[in-house]
Length: 255
Image (cartoon, rainbow, N blue to C red; front, side):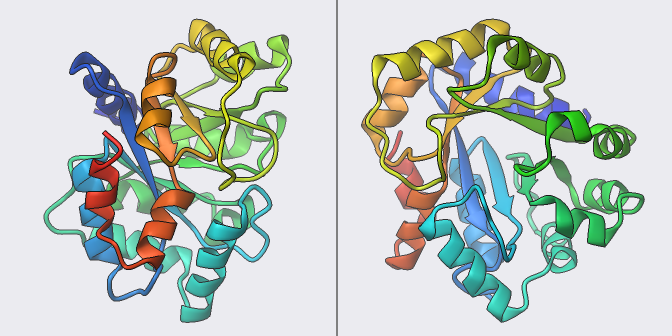
């Protein structure tokens, strides 16, 4: 099964079991490089998909929590080659598909010819690239397609209907439905129009839909789970790590 198919299948499996799929986000190498593999295994044990953030100096879509984790990881020397090597060396292999969330510059610096090959060999199933416009994504998408890797598309509450249709038509793995305009980490008070927007995305998406940004409680997981297939938990998970909590136990508390 190709990487993008693994992602969709894992989320669909959760829904067939009557539960909302969890996508857990970890900043690579945070809170420390030595403990990253263990934290990754713990998150993979509770999540249906794992999203690993590649630290970047200008994380424009991320709020203060993930910025803080990203800068801490960069100070330790975390890099994209190190992340790919860490995923490749995981033992045992996690059942949950692994995605990398990266801004475009680290991917270009790695090289678009060898990136898909190395990622696939490491067991990485796809990428989320928040600063890459859909209209400029053909080169990366073609490179990833050669290895069956997903390029996950993001939509927002202000995405016009015609653009939403184009993004969904090109979707692989899942559609990342951002819950708000702005950056990650804010607590979401969910108005009815946000749920209606989720319903609109769900109607046109040919792949599962996951809501993300600001989700940090069991009640929110339950609320969004009635409208989409899964939720992305990022800043709240990073904050649990900052408090010294077990990441797997934190994620289990959201179910």
